[in-house]
Image 1 (cartoon, rainbow, N blue to C red):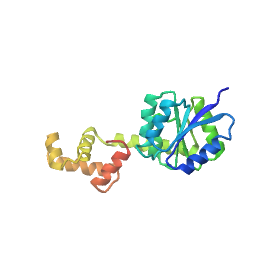
Image 2: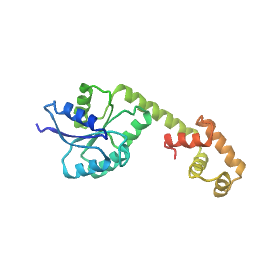
Image 3: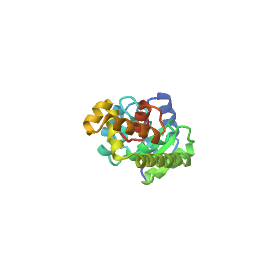
Image 4: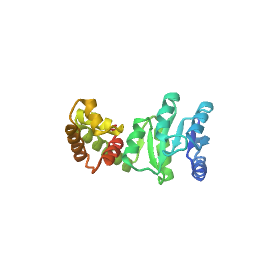
Length: 209
């Protein structure tokens, strides 16, 4: 049986070195490269056969999750496991949507890491119990918010997030400024925020804009 070829992508050198040392103790794995940035990752994938990439979220030269989506298009056979300190539901959901096969927090032990690699190598997804709960919870919140906001409210929300004033939004949608303000107030109530800045931030978090 051929060895699984692994790449480690993280901007912290000590973490990469520790991870490589851990992985190389396994007889089934071969670390074929490591990268400290998104650009280095793509250079590595272009010249080296890689089966699985262990990938951080926060990376120099680009968002790690966006890089996964792009890499999956260019190198569809490569499977990604996110290995990060970010334990928030929205990161997990985005990772899955962008094509990640697994998601682990950096405090995972060696046994769990190796199990994740094994499952992903078989084409299965791997998320531990905590991550699964986060993902389900975030998707439930997001789905709820989508249901709550009407199509017109979503239109207003998009224009407000684009920096349009109340008057400009009203002119673009052929409604009164009072109607726009009513939509804005209703959206803030529905998303449980106090002002327009929080509204835009929450909407972006829920990927409504």
